[in-house]
Length: 372
Image (tube, rainbow, N blue to C red; front, side):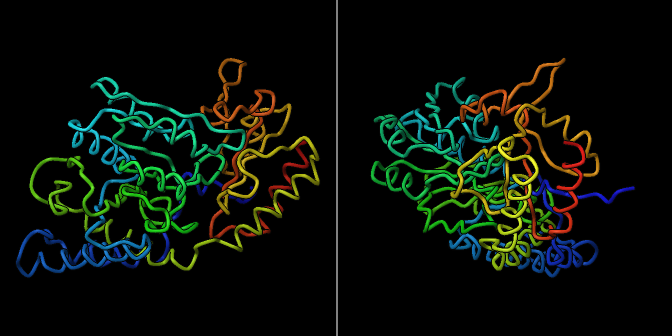
């Protein structure tokens, strides 16, 4: 049996050793409620606050601006719905883009049922939104702009600092979904200029079921979960100490991986290998340079991505099109980018990680070549 090769790190990452070690004491010994002011609760509280500081260290913010959540989807929902409900007196208009994750687009669609007006802006062939389109979309009723930091499918990095400058000039809160960028490239909130930033633990080598939302001090936002006054009154519910400490440790460990130069070099070498085998029959999706260092989304022109991966069952990667009864439907992201169906039906996303080796990639190239 051939060895299994994992090239789907944008979907989920393994738990890093630092996070595993951080969790061990909380699996058996430290079981107290972090809100309890006695000998059992205080170690848990201290651990949560340490973790909050570790997350803040990666994001470049004050620990008081970090709220633990159940993951990226909750963080996005909290940011979008929270700003909407807290600012109904100011307006009802939200600006976003066509290539956002469903955890952004679907909350916006939900809010439309409650009276929100949502402008969904187009992107170019590289998947990038034009900041001038953002500026033109703003009205006197705009209360939120939400644009992802980088796209999960094609890896395009959006011009967040430019957009945040426009939002700040207009006095509008700006949210970015940074699930794909935290731990890969800098997601410093001051450099980005954002008011709200979402992150997901399982994209940064922490467990699934934990995330965080950065809230700039002074941002007007309604709590997402109502109840007791946990997380400084911003999210009710007893903190998940076990997963919070894992996220904190993973964020601290991630600081040395920012930029991922080794992974980027492997990605580019892999792309050169694909070109060597397939030539012009392999085309790139996403921006050629402003792209996540670990992400390679390519079209195998004239072929179906799902069929290619079916011939490589030991290789874990993602397709950009769905097959339905003999027909192929492009993903909403590729369709929004204007990728021709005859190209996009062959889309495959290879997303590399910290543990990816050239030997693995060379083996994938060999298997692809033998099935070409």
